[in-house]
Length: 621
Image (cartoon, rainbow, N blue to C red; front, side, top):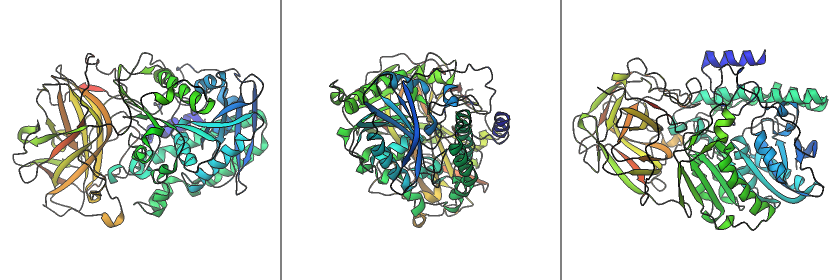
């Protein structure tokens, strides 16, 4: 009944499963609402020597549920902790063995087999833990601190603790490490919201309520797994607390909070993890996916707040759950072996930046298989962040042209607003373009370069600096989509960015030619005046892509369309808007070019790249 109810709701409302999406017995990764009855389910046998469950009492007396899976040997063990509000406090239970688990049982098994104790900790107010749910509230970090120190003192722990996992379990690491628990030796966060508002709740200032709304349905499902394990174990205490948390969650739901806090205020800023990541002192191994359908690739740019020598980072095209990749795991294990176990394996002397190029998967039978087999076709390495790039500018020009190092000229182009751009990588059409919306020809503009005469390898964020005018005012929302046109007429999705024009005001001290940094405060709001050309710098989140010689670069300009799990609440007053590109209003796209890279690989086959789907060029004549 629960599965059918969730599936009907997802299909009816086109909700998207959100943070920490993973394969379960109810829904498979990345495909909510679809019939998963024919997808093979993994069944697990106990792979640990001993399982211990219990509660950790934090400094204020709140008790957090934990579950520890210990290796099949005697003595004390180094410990790796996964801390989240999903079902982490129930790992090893009946649901977990049925693969009804948010994260990766296979990864846990590998780590236990390598001699680590794997411990799941449940956040306060979630699952079977006491307290009040407060997503990314201050207690999340202090609770994490207390949990690490208490786990380090367990009789089976050798006192050396690391943290791992992605999404909610990635954010927990950043918040915990910023509290500097003495027993924490290293963290490996993947796919984190470094700045929840800028990365998720309102990217570019455009509200994105679909993601948050769907996330609560997913949270309900994950707690159903907690309940199933507790029932099979006869754990009355857990079931009682779970029922209380289920009854209370509505009072503290993000959907409710974001209505109360529509702009960046003290409540929102308190949940801005980036504001505290400079306090982290332990080594960090980070994983980012450029087309991450759940948290995007910005991560609040928290990486620039830590010391370059303490950070190692892997960046790739692909989905939210690519943390499961066996190739990434090789680096993960070496990282923990060095910094938690103390093995002299040379990891500390390895390059700090791995930029995976054109990542594919050889096995797409199930979502787990897709993520586990994901690996790059080739790789670029750099010693440390920041990676040096050369800004390269493409001018918007008459006739829908995009001219490298050119000058803007021509009369304004007009388009009907708001007609949303096509969906991309949503769960209904995952790893694919959606259908073109009715009226798209008059509701979008495209600017395309001539075939490139050299290989152009991009890296990092981009800035679409577009002069816009509207006859109506006081606002409009802009979406810029970057694509690659292949000689055979296929169009490859690369990346997207958004801007609410009233939120366009920048912090000039932090902005660069390739990354506009919005002030994003209530006092910085500036309405558009009717018929008045206005410059909007649209931030395109980070990506790396190889535009080979002979291919063409294109940008689309339209209203925001659904992208991954993001569905936007667009400013909806209809208008016939203009894009200006003349000497006085020089609209352009600025990319970061990665110099000195030899592109030796062939152009990948269409639809082989993870989260970079192809389609037939809709403008092809």
